[in-house]
Image (cartoon, rainbow, N blue to C red; front, side):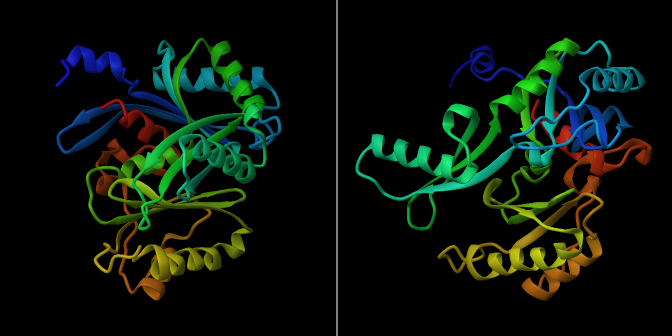
Length: 313
């Protein structure tokens, strides 16, 4: 077993501070660990002009860097975190793309690498030379095929945000899409299946967690009026395919986390009852181990950055 200092060298500690950037808002969080969970030590949010950030995978996101820098400086000042330099950052959901990619059996490592590259380029609609990738190996599927969670950012878009961070004087260790921060609240040793539904202006992202790892993921682009139908399809897919995974003893969904004003929590619970026969009450901050003193700030605003800050432990 490696010594503590060797472990720290291999896995440097992430900061307990994080910022979430969205179209129309930004939020900052500093976490502290307490008994039975995490405590918001400092937090604040600020509204941004809708035109200031226009999330896109392959187009410019920030219309005026100086205006955004000024707004973020005011945000850090109001939260008492202006002197902090080390951060994790969650980006708008549609500024990046994430997918679970499965590799069929091949005869060589080279063939596997070539197949993975082909699937990434096909799935994300851009050559590898234009992408920055993060890859996480997932457990084998029921047919013993390799599976990878791939998150991609377009180099031009990532560079735009990194230029902002450099101008702010920040050292940013993690830059991840919003849902990755939010799903951290479902990675706490739970052995059942959990479902995250997080909304954005163009639809929503659904992440099914099994054994604390993403098992199924879908990003759905739809109008607000069509969200119910799309969520219904997601849950039918889980019931008919993902719920069994070739194993009759597969655990049912027993936790539901719904983030974002575009989704009606009560209606999502009704859809779960209709499709899965499960009575699921959407989790609140205390259910996932986060204490927000006085409820001074919305969990929807800080769930993503707080989830990244949680990774410091």
